[in-house]
Figure 1 (cartoon, rainbow, N blue to C red):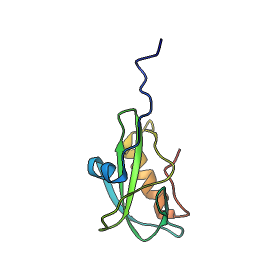
Figure 2 (cartoon, one colour):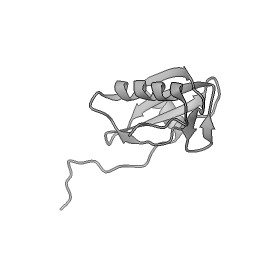
Figure 3 (spheres, rainbow, N blue to C red):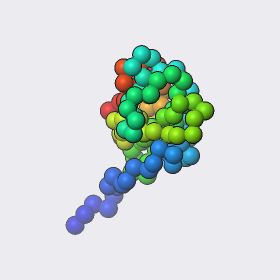
Length: 107
């Protein structure tokens, strides 16, 4: 018999879908080495970051070149929402991207 109280991980939405529903959006200038994405590898420069929760208790992060049309998934996600909540994760991602080095979603 399965445990109906635990949600199983579902499919990860597209980066565009994440950006459309993300309650937390910020802008940052990526440090040397930029931010690593699943779709196109490293992006650098002015980056917009969107962090969104998933129904199963995980969170995902999408990034784009600021003012561009395309969004990309930041590598390393989805991850469990930390004890400090989605705000904590979003802030940590912004700080990691500022440092660069191919920043990914922290695990």
